[in-house]
Every structure is written in structure tokens, then in C-alpha cells.
Image 1: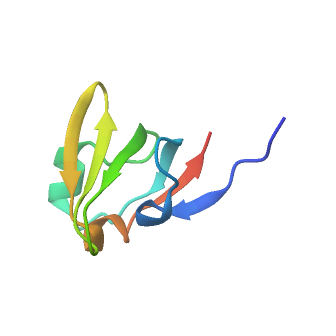
Image 2 (image 1 turned 120 degrees about the vertical axis):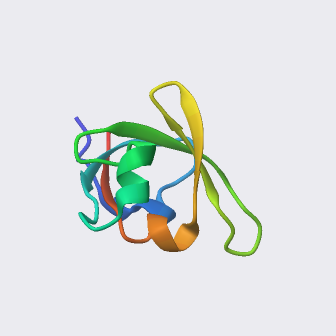
Length: 77
């Protein structure tokens, strides 16, 4: 069994399934997108030159600014 690794969301390898373990409580937009502790997601794409990340959350695709993703911590599964 492999050990889960902790990453900032903007550092997660593409297509790796992960679970949010910490998200800023003051970021209402991230909560509305589904980035809350315990939620599973996958990073599908990264925008060019520090652009947005495209995430798969609950069967939907959602875009998150890289500076917002940097504030979330996830464990890989």
C-alpha cells in the first residue's frame, strides 16, 4: 500500500486523484466550487504560464485560479 502524499492543489500531478484536506475558510468562491475538506477531485489541465487549473469534481469540470489553488492542501489517493 502506498503512502498518501500532501500537496498544495496547484502542485498535484495531472490526472492524480486527491482529497481536499484543508481549504481556506474565508474563500467562499472555493467552497461554492466544491473545494471543501473531504471532497475528492482530479486536476485535468493547467493553463499556460500560471493560468487556471481545470478540475474534475463530482462529475463536473470547474476552473480555479492558480493563486486560489495554492491556498488548498490535498492528499493523493
